[in-house]
Length: 156
Image 1: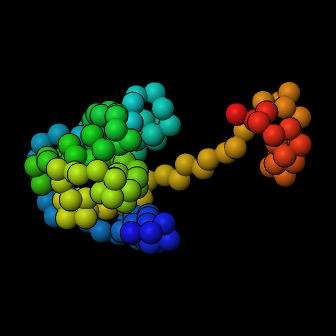
Image 2: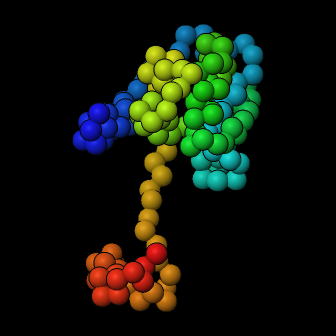
Image 3: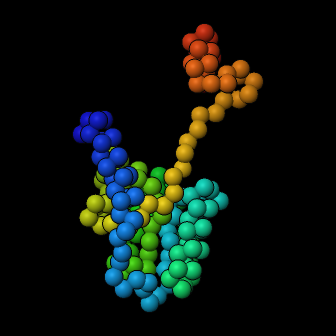
């Protein structure tokens, strides 16, 4: 698979997460406690977002939703845990598209993300920013590029 195909597949999966928002599970909520597994460590942005979602989901379904952080391996540990969980709707995943789209091409997984997991809704959009130390003297990306060209090897 070349880079263009990989990017196309990533975009397709990412967009399907948003389109799948209207899907619903049968017999939800399950009769036992609901666990929302997060693919990242506690205290980060994903954890904070998952806790907000868990609170609102719990209010909507009338039972508590427990957040369980299973960070590591770029989110693959959490994805594998949920893929191997009982298929009764009691274990949900708050993860990222990386383990769904990139991991299958880089490593041998014990599960098939496309067969064992089903996206039901998009969660949140985390924008990324490019930041430089204020003393560097660049206020825009163009200035940063110009600065790095002016002083080759000075930007790490």
